[in-house]
View 1: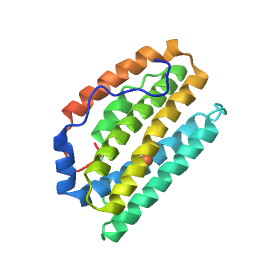
View 2 (view 1 turned 60 degrees about the horizontal axis):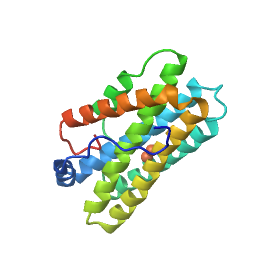
View 3 (view 1 turned 60 degrees about the vertical axis):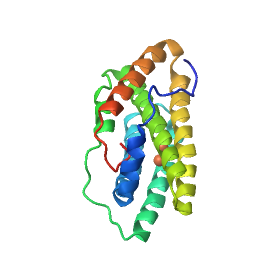
View 4 (view 1 turned 30 degrees about the vertical axis):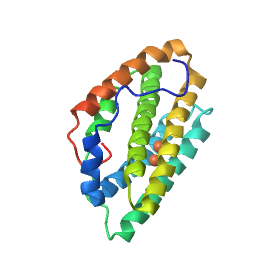
Length: 194
Ligand SMILES: [Fe+2]
Ligand SMILES: [Fe+2]
C-alpha cells in the first residue's frame, strides 16, 4: 500500500441505517460517547508516546477536533433534551484494540493502523447518515463530519509512514482491514455507530 488512503473490505449493510433512523436519539447519545472516547484515546497516546515529538502536534490537533465533534454532537443532544447516559463498551472498537500487539514498535504501529481503520469506518457511516437524514441541520453536520473523519484516517497513516517504512506496515495493515470486515459483519445491529 504505502498510501494514506485505503478502502475497507466491506460496506455497511442497508439494515444499519434503518436501525439508526428508527431511534435517532439513541444513536446521537452513542455517537457523542464515541467522539468523547476518540478524544480520550488520543490524549492517552500523547501521554504514552512523549518521545515521538514529530507526531505530538498532530495528535493534539486530532484530539481537539474530536473534542469539538463531541461538543457539537452534545449540542444536538441538548436541543432534543437528551443527556449522556451510562457508558457502554463499544464491541467493535474493543475487539480491534484487543489485537494490538505488544512491543514498542508493534504496539505503536497497531494503534495507529487500528485508529485509521476505525476513522475510515466512522467516515463511511457518517456519510450514510448524512445521505439519509431528512433534518437539514443534522444532514449538514454529518456531511461535515464524514469529511473530517476520512481526513483523520489519512492523518493516522501519514503519521505512521513518517516513522516506519511500508515494509513494516503493509502486511499488518491488510490483516487489520480483513479483521475489521469480520468484526463489522458479526456486529449486532443497534442504533449506534457500531
Ligand atoms: Fe470525530
Ligand atoms: Fe476522527
